[in-house]
Image (cartoon, rainbow, N blue to C red; front, side, top):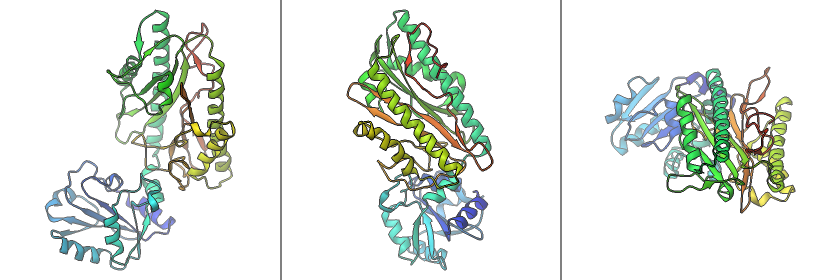
Amino acid sequence: MKIAEIQTALAALRLDAWLLYDFRGSNPIAQSVAGLAEAHITRRWFCLIPAHGQPRWLIHRIETSNFVDVQGSVTLYAGWEELHAEMDALLAGVKAVAMEYSPNAAIPYISRVDAGTLEWIRGFGVEVHSSAELAQRVEARLSEAQAIGHQEAARLVLQAKDYAFAWIGEQLRAGNAITEYAVQQQLLRQFDEMELITDHPPIVAVNANSSDAHYAPTATHTQPIKTGDFILIDLWAKQKAPDAVFADTTWVAYAGETVPDRYVEIFEIVKEARDRAVAFIREKWAADEPIYGYAVDDCVREYITEKGYGQFFIHRTGHNIGTTIHGNGVNLDNLETRDARVFIPGICFSIEPGIYLTDFGVRTEIDVLLAGPGTDGVRVTTSPVQNRVLPLLSPCNSVSSDL
């Protein structure tokens, strides 16, 4: 465990201790922090990490083999009465702890500890605070190696996107019949060649399917792609290295020579909303002012609403990105939840506003990495970004240039 880093964060957040708890994989944050994500543990375990001193573990007697090399002291229990007595001793002198709990379940990514366990811990006279900011500082900040790996993944993901759109154009010009699923499989083959991995096949959606934000074709549920279709591709992947970080992007195109005005109109609104989010973050970051996840969402949502399409923007503006595609850091959200966490150096996140109408939906998605003081600060890692709907059959079209 990153004990020094955790204790620094505890001091900065004025928290007495972090009480990690897991039961059969119910708390992936605790598993990750404790370095036990790959362990097969069937009984409840706890680890109290104080702001000063060594961690103290409380584990079941039949699980000792999983905790041989842990840092700190280990106490054992078997029966529930012994567990209660040992927890009382573990928490002696502790006034407050952080746990994976979010008041009113405001941030479901953090709400991992069940209500009964919270009641039990509070029964010892201990205050329980949310570990939301603590988990972000420990779990969501990228190392230098992770940041470099993410940027390489971003480069390759954009390259795979270029290949897919070019392939669509080539197939349509040749008069070949293709489907959303066929394009998806082309992308997965590209990932294999690039030695990238993903947790779910890419989204390839045409026309009305593009208005379903999480649509994805399958071998048995797919639509043909024809001349005159609107096409959305959302793809995400990461390198195979340990602790590799995802890259995630969404682009849109038109299977024709000249993009219809309606597609251009909606794309321009979504693009401007995306760019306003980047400008808002850069301005606040340069001024060393706190940036809240909900505030970035407000900035984007207010603009789309002003343009008359607020009711068609049906998801948050963006999500944290880490070793999982939806990481444990701050989300750009004041719709699905009100994320009041603050942006900190080292985090990576998407900005992906969208407008989803009945017959088509537009989303443009970029990734942003926040660097530390004295650097260029706000880095758009999925660059170049999309600045127009791609006309795939235009004689002079290039899928990656003039964007």
